[in-house]
Image (cartoon, rainbow, N blue to C red; front, side):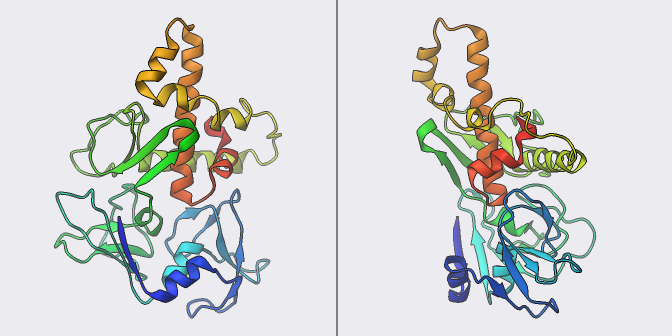
Length: 280
C-alpha cells in the first residue's frame, strides 16, 4: 500500500493535539482514549473504538470522530493505493461529502459507505473505502508466535467464518490470510463478529464480566507457534492427544482474529482481546 498526504496530516499523526476546533462542529473537540469504549463516529458514520475526538460538552453533546477521520478532515489531500489490486489500479482519494445515489459498498469490508470515504479517481465505476479500511495494514505479524497475515483481494483459501471464497458479486470484500494457509477471514466477517460482540456487551452491561471463558492471556500467548509454523508445528504434534491439538488450534485462531480486530479498529492487541472477549 502506498499513501500520499499533505505535511499537516503527517504532523497531526505524529503529534495529535489534545484539544482542537473544527469548522464543521460548533464546540471544541477533546482527544479521548477510548480503546474499550465504543462510540459512533459522525464523520464516517461507523461504530468505532480506539482514540477519538469527543465534543468538549460531553454531557450535552454526543459528537465523536475517529482520530483518523478528524486528521483526514483537516488534510488538504490524502490518497492511498494498494499494490495487490492487480486487475485494477485504483487510486483512492479522501472525500468528506457523503456518498449519494443509493447503496455504495466498501471494497474492503463489503459494508455500506454512509459518510466520509475514499473514492477511486481512476475507475469509471465508482469504488469506495471506509477511512479505516483504507488504512488497513498490508501485513500483520505476531513475531513471538510466528503468525503473519497478509491482506488480499483474492485468495484460494476459504473464509473460516462464512465458509466462502472469492464472492462472484464482489460483496464479501478483502481477506486476511495467514502465511501458513490455515487461517483466512474476510475483513467484513471479522467486523461482523466484532460488532455482534459490542452489541452483546451493551446488553450485558449489568452482568459480572469477570467470568471469561478462559484468561485473556491464553488468547494471545502460547499456541500460535505450534499451529502456524506449519511443518515444524505438525512434527511437534505427533503423538499428542486430539484435545491438545484442538486447544492449540483454538489459541491460534483467537490470536488471528484478535490481530485482525486490532488492525480494523486501530487499537493495541491486548485491548482487542479485552474488548472482544465474548468472541473467545
